[in-house]
Image 1: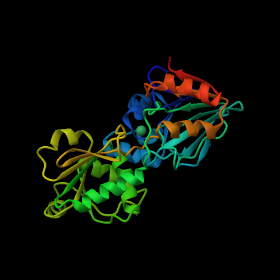
Image 2 (image 1 turned 120 degrees about the vertical axis):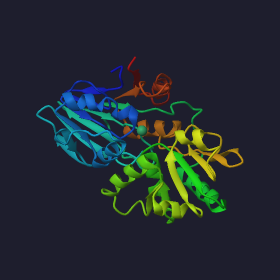
Image 3 (image 1 turned 90 degrees about the vertical axis):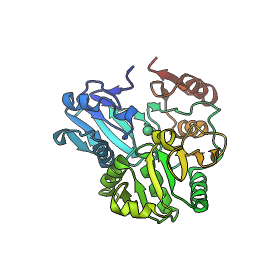
Length: 322
Ligand SMILES: [Zn+2]
């Protein structure tokens, strides 16, 4: 639909399609939009426990009687008509791709994804794909782990606090990966970041390590020496000239090199939770769908990417909505 909703049978995904069931693939604004309208009209809102946890942290509270928590890897029959399955998608905590089956027809929607770590929807009749980076100009020759290692090197070099800026959900995914890389110092977070992390901690109890809310006594104590502070992406431009310390923005639209220095104490890190152009193409190749629909409501490169799928892979492909 023009508003970005993907509708099939009595299900509407990532947009309001006035259907009995509303699916939210992950807690990013362009995917949970109109959720409160859907909450009024739909029988159930279907999302992973992590997605509801992030939404609660953002203050977007879906009524409890409307929630249907479906964990990654699980499948439900909505009625005689449609079954729905969530597959693991590497993007932010709780992200899934969705497989809908009805009358022996299968429609898969990738949602937002990073190819590495995502379970590919196998041989659907129709594959609806996100192509945020749908142009050959969008290629990264480094991995997110390379970028995180450079961020850790900057942190180690810094003598003062280091601010890390990113979107809600993305920051929590980054913190989980930094912990996996062995970064075990406590971190400080601004209020919404903290609330989201705290809610996710109930589902992912061990992953986040120690974290504290900015402004509390513990955080003030930590800020006396070097510490990593996590804040929303928009604060990078607002506060980097006035806040003490080093500033690092996570930005997937940076394609020059893993970390670009902007001024003496500011950096842009090319960390993305979306596939680049090559990863998006590889997804289609591995999925082997009969037909591809490229989501043009969330990518301006959808039409071009559909052309590439037809031309390079010989698979019927169109961009929708038109
Ligand atoms: Zn997203």
